[in-house]
Length: 85
Image (tube, one colour):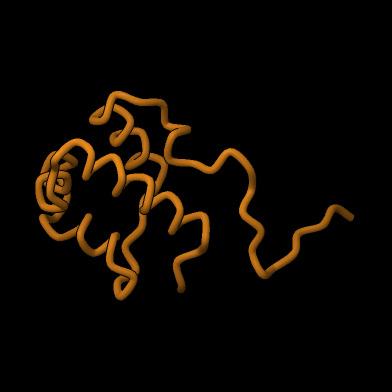
């Protein structure tokens, strides 16, 4: 399964915070108790790693920011259209 636009957005926001904090992908992975390559793989489009809500909450604790910092303010339209019936 491909990474969606909103998942890529979230990954990029975490990467921005990680870089600003001076952490390597390995250091952030280990802070989360994940495999040492997890964050590097999430940041590399060649891999399918992505973050869940528990990850986002942990990032918010680590970076001392709101969880919403990792989520776009407005929806990101995908190719699939959702409609109310």
